[in-house]
Length: 87
Image (cartoon, rainbow, N blue to C red; front, side, top):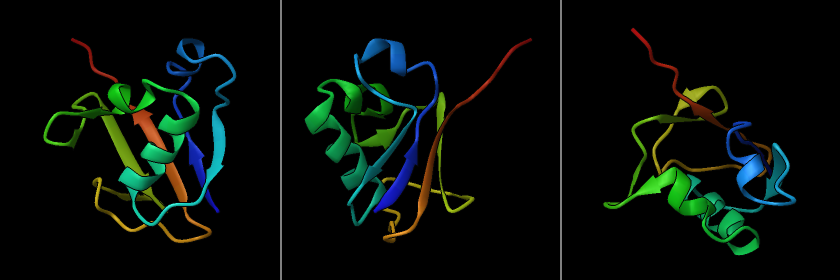
């Protein structure tokens, strides 16, 4: 199972959503869709129309920048990180 790590900004929006979740998935999008089954609406917070990863988020698989079609291995670590911007 892949180890998915989510930003703390998402957990207050979805009761019972931990910051770390294990899922079985072949791609980043499949991992997100798996989370969507347990926490409806979560996909919309990560993925926008297209589909594409929302601009203010970055996704990494095993430390490498990833897209929605990036493969996820059984023991992969998938990090969803909120981008920080400022002026």
